[in-house]
Image (cartoon, rainbow, N blue to C red; front, side):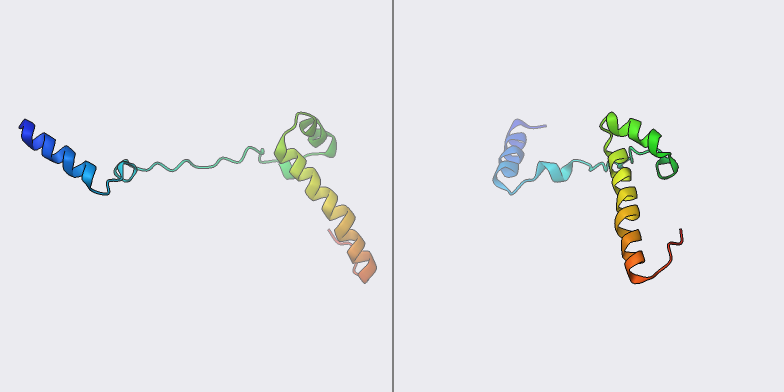
Length: 85
């Protein structure tokens, strides 16, 4: 390549609104759920072991279970709806 041509191209790229990130091919990283597939069917004691290890998915599952047992069943009792699983 001619040195003058290379200099002209470099100058044109610097002058223009050049976005180098747009020229790079984008890769999308898929998010993998850290929770095991059987997280919803685990026993409470097994989940408790994972919460002691500070696993966020286990803490969230324990929170969901607490919410459904305490709040949902209380609202059903106060409204007269049977607790059907």
